[in-house]
Image 1 (cartoon, rainbow, N blue to C red):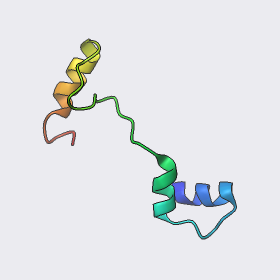
Image 2: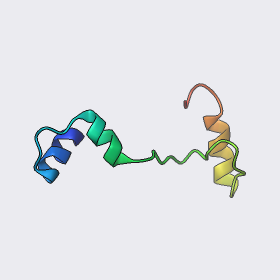
Image 3: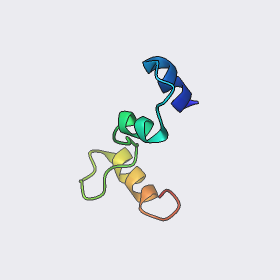
Image 4: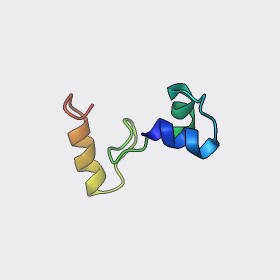
Length: 56
């Protein structure tokens, strides 16, 4: 669905999943980046949840 939306938006039916990946950019998540200190309690708990294999 996202690839089709991109194709329609850019009026280019030749776009591929590689093009979609380029345009989507960096993934943003509520789980803090490894190696950065937590900003608050939420970051601490989300970091703890994301540290195991379950969330990765």
